Amino acid sequence: MRNEEISQSLKLFIVLSRAYKALHENTNHFFQENGMNPTEFAVMELLYHKGQQPLQKIGQKILLASGSITYVIDKLEKRGFIERVNCPTDRRVTFAEISSDGKAFMDQLFPEHEKQIHELMSGLTSDEKEQAIELVKKLGLSIKDLSY
Image (cartoon, rainbow, N blue to C red; front, side):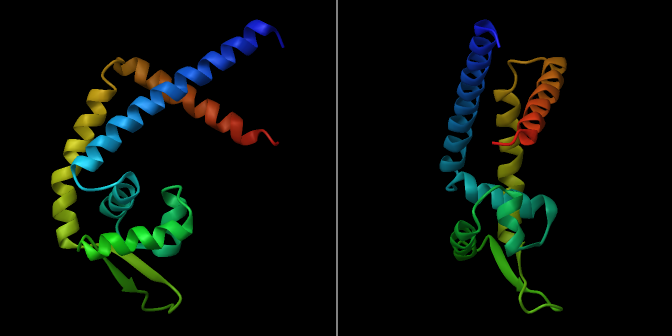
């Protein structure tokens, strides 16, 4: 490896990290303004778009440790945004389902979130976004293949 290539890799890491930090800070601020944290929003968004989900599967779908999910589900249930539903065929399984209040909340919030994300990404053209998607996906998949 040449020093120039190593330096370029470090620079890319820093640029990606700073871009992620800027996006993360902006979206977190939006969630907080609307009385949620990012994890609560992720659970709500999953249930809003994908429907009823087994509690045991939510953590892996939103990349969160399973121990934290119970706490988040409890908070959302207390707010009336979700309901727990027992599985009729397997007593070991409990589903989380968005309530009508939760759906109404997301009907209002999600379009604002989409608009904010679009504005945050407006520094890139449509073609540049497509290139970025492909390149970052390629990077993520190549990292998965490395074994440490």
